[in-house]
Each structure stands twice: as C-alpha cells, then as structure tokens.
Image (tube, rainbow, N blue to C red; front, side):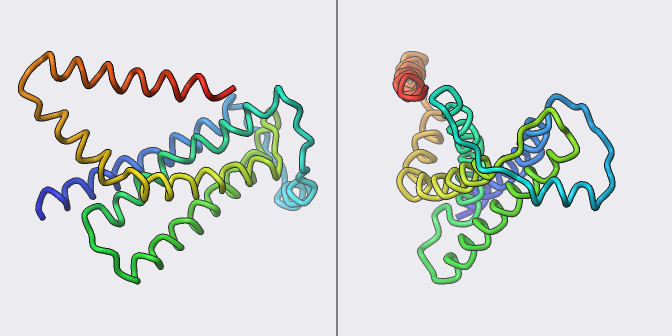
Length: 179
C-alpha cells in the first residue's frame, strides 16, 4: 500500500505541474496588453463559436489533447489502486468541474493576450479532453501504471529496448491517426 500511495502522490505532482505548463502554453506568445476589467468582460461576452475548416480542426484536436494528461494524472492521484467507492464519484465530478473552470479561465486569460484566438470551440475541446483523460484512466490507467513500473525494474537492456520499441511503435501509430 505504501507503493500505491507513492504512485498516487507522483500522479498528483505530475498533474499539478502540468497545469501551469498548460496555462503558459496557452498564452504564448507573451504579449500582454493591459485592459480594464469591464473591457475584458465585454470581449469575453463576445467570444465566438468559430466555423472551423479542415485545416483548423487540428488546432481543435490539439486543444483537447493537451488537457488529457492532466485529467489522466489527477484521476490517477484520486484512484490508483483504490477500490471503487461512491466518494470517488464526487472526486471525479469535482475534478471535471475544476478542469472545466481551468479551461474557461485560460480562455478568459487570453483576453489579455490579443494574439491568441478565443473561442467556444477551445472550451468545448478542452472539456472533451478532460473527459477523455478520465475515461483513459478508467480504460488503461492501472495497467499502464503497472507496465511503467515493471519497465523501470527490468533487469536486462534487451528487455528495455524491446519496451521502448513497442512504445515507440504505438506512439507512431497514434501520431499518424491525427491530422
């Protein structure tokens, strides 16, 4: 059980460290333009729903994909090697609400960085990414964690090379599926 709590803490730390990284990446390039609060609210109220062409869909997908690891790691923090209990449902609901708040907050922050495009599409994509992170944890979280732990403790170089090659092949296949 000690190893399980260490793993949960590691997931929590990784998830928490990914949050400021997401915020930072979402406001690049850093060209802050100070505006009054009421002006910011007016711009926020006018946030559009963009009609995306084929070339812009990759950006929409990317907005969802960048949220998946945070949601996945925080789900690992909540539930790695824990039996299902109803209080976990409250934790998952709070996690999704928090992720939604983070995504909305990031879009609002972009009001102050005019080179960034604000859109409802980005909010929806981020929320879908948060939900996918949760479902990814449910689907493979425990097994992926055990695989990663077993990889760390492999005793031969050839076994590690095989593991790295396998992960590389899977990553290549997944990368080829996205535009």
